[in-house]
Amino acid sequence: MNEENNQKPALIARIGLLFTFMFALAVLVACSSGSGETAATPTIGPTVEPTPASTEPRRGQAAVDSVDVLVMESFPVQISVTARGNLPDSCTRIDEIITRQTGETFRVAVTTLRQPALNCTQALVPFEETIPLDVIGLPAGTYTVLVNGVEGSFTLAVDNVSPDSETTGAGAAPVAEPGISGLIWHDVCSQTGLAAEGVTLEEGCVVSAAGDTIQADGIRAGDEPGIPGVSVRLLAGDCTTATEGDEVVAKTDESGAYRFADATPDTYCVFLDTADEENAAILEEGVLTFPVSNGVGTNSVTVTLDESAALADVDFGFDFSFLPVPETASDCKNSFEFVQDLTVPDNTVFPPGAEFEASWRLRNNGTCPWTKDYAVAFIGGDAMGITSTVKLANAVAPGQTEDVSITLTAPATPGTYRSNWQLSDAAGTVFGINGANEDAFWVQIVVEEGAEFVGPPTAGSAVIGGVVWNDTCFLTNGSPSRGCVETAEGSGFYRGNGTFDANETSIPGITVILGRGACPEGGVPTPANRMATTVTDADGLYRFEGLDADIYCVSIDALSPENVDILIPGNWTYPAPGTGRLGIRLAAGEQRLTIDFGWDHAE
Image 1 (cartoon, rainbow, N blue to C red):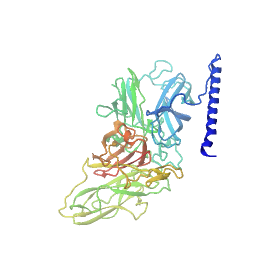
Image 2 (cartoon, one colour):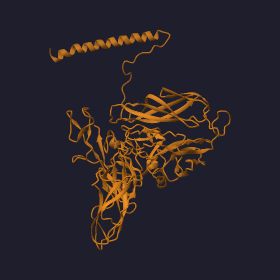
Image 3 (cartoon, rainbow, N blue to C red):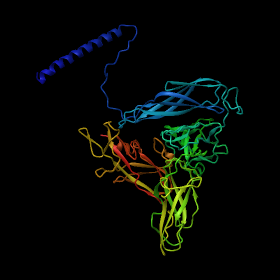
Image 4 (cartoon, helix red, strand yellow):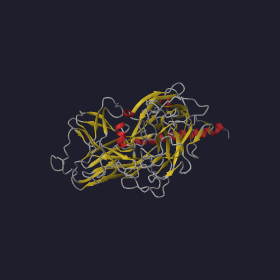
């Protein structure tokens, strides 16, 4: 039978099926119009011509699988609800969380946002959100909590009002003074910064949102103290648009409380700048645990103050690294990795008697946390003016890096000199690179008569830069091109390999953001944290100059109005798949010019 004859029976069959469908539909319509009630008619196919896919973001409600109601053992009681579920793909994120109380029911809506036309991983993405409930002043009773329809409950045995608060009647809420106020408290967890795998969590500790380390739980216990002397800023507008410059500053008192008494009705951003010089001296190293945005602690929160109203619980929880200092396991290992010289490359020339600072970056690659009783220890070679130990400035968790410095003096006699150093633990036991007793880091200089002394790097002389490039990957007849890697073994899906190969091109016109402090998880720095922006040149290069020694976040928002038409659709391949940001600890005078970003355009 030839191809033409083979097609005719199929065509006749399809025509017959179409007439059968139309007859059945007519019978259904006739039955519906003849009854007293309207019967629902199943929709078999589209009733209108299909329209092009929307270019607007798609919003919806998150699929919540379970809720846990958490009751803080304090009085008045503080209560939060933790919602867990799954997002449908890697492009969908949590958008807004809206809470409403009606009588004895709290209704919480967790909404989602998905940008159109993105190259997404089609796999469920777990999420967890902890949402505080406003329960101050509630009378005793049982309350229901509904998060996207999933139910939980809690019971107040007594009226939730502080006994020494002013009230307007039985069970009434405390009378708060108008303005915006809150508390900054030490959220205690003795295991903060430790690797999460195989560790039994102590009370008040949880696994971080990233899943690799431990931190405090973001819930204030009654014995957790406030942190005095911390500056809090109040900026006009919400935290996505507010900028520094015309802000009001309040400082926490001895109890950790702060207050903006003269705030007028408006929308504000309450901003705790952990990178501020005075705040950094108080907070040192640690993590914010409350409030939470996208599962991680955030340093800013948007509030709206109504006429004659008071906002009294705009709180921030901060978990200090190793406070209290955990007991060091008897079988833990002291070890470090040498990362780089920061200030004095080998054979730097100095005149006789010149004083200079030698700095190195080390990584704790052992299992023992380094407390402030750990020190840099001279172990041999040329002393160059110092043979004592120099204690670490910060506690350092396993996996973290630390910059260590010592001040030395060039010898009076010309020649080549080398000073060898290791670390020592709290007991004074020295250990070297990768735990070896014989391996040290050193500074080696050359002393010459008449040499010009350059001195230490000046403030504002550090630089960050890099390139943004097209990380090319394409398929030809199902076969991946050179430069492709499989997203998961056996998946059949490919992306660029994260390496700037010789045949790949740079991307000009990309807006790059420089933020102050560590990068926020799951997003770019807020406007309040942004220091500068720049645009990649014709060669895809960018550069931020005039920087001081500090911690910075370099990020690119692919969905911003400036970048979306250039980058979308596609995704990041470097510095990590799906990640367009990188945190940097910059030393004085350091030039980090390899902070690069690779982008794989989706075809």
